[in-house]
Image (cartoon, rainbow, N blue to C red; front, top):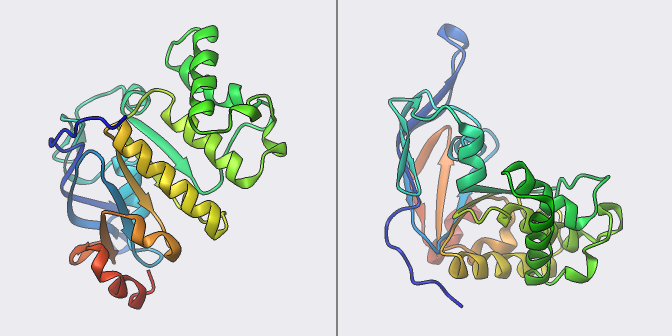
Length: 250
């Protein structure tokens, strides 16, 4: 069942910049980037290699610190003037953010259920309840019949669904995906995108994905294009302007 949409932003990035090094060796990875993302939206970050899109995703994920600017996540200010306002970033990530990667990155020595349950246990949930929640998620994502399978025995699509279950374990409202369909064929890629759409609506979540996968461009609500660390031409293309994204080789 869909959750009533909350119109307050889940992600607000305000004039964020990121540089590496200093002096002649300084590299500006992001320059004065601002984006706002709302619940139930699927957002794409496009751009050529080195454009800053992965840097932006890592800042939103509280993995990489910005050099300047401000950021709010789920209504909470977490960065001001390039400084973290919280010291417990691990807890912040556990509470607010789910991560999905190109490769499912499942732990090879744990079965599907335990790969999901371990995230809950890290957050302090006891083992029995963690496994119960894991099985519920696997059932929800229609891979419950593979709950005892080891990662090596999962298909690409099954492994990605288990990875999505892991990302959802702590009920985050912000889900970050780095090339989530690049390793999948067209059919499985469309299934994953339909699933992400369902999750965004039912859990009132926002999904932000870095992608080069042209076969899923039409599945996003908004597309932000980056080039040389800046938002390109205002940064945003709507679904009706996919030709621009294709022409730029995104």
